[in-house]
Image 1 (tube, rainbow, N blue to C red):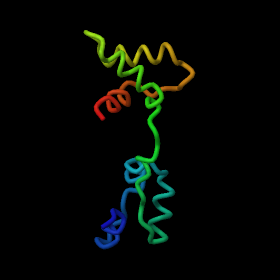
Image 2 (image 1 turned 180 degrees about the horizontal axis):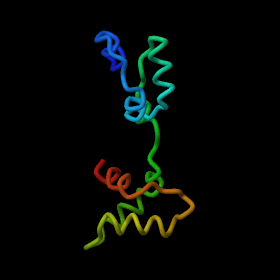
Image 3 (image 1 turned 60 degrees about the horizontal axis):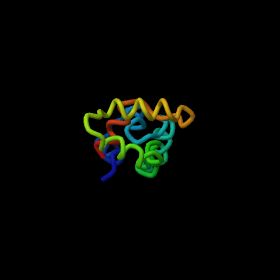
Image 4 (image 1 turned 90 degrees about the vertical axis):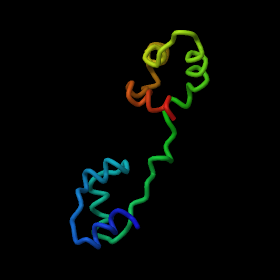
Length: 97
């Protein structure tokens, strides 16, 4: 059962902003799906990570003794400022995956 269908059956109007944040959609898009009786498709997994391009560099640097995730992230930011890499929190999540 989809999330919006669950709210419909309970007769509760959902928080469109919160649902949109979880699914990577704008709140007005979620509200449109709610009004039209449609269900939300999770498209977050379709996007490639900005760090995928530098995966081999990350793996080589991570293999060095005494290196930290923060050091690897700072290295990437310093060497590739044009790439527009995400912040450190996104990098730690990428490393865990």
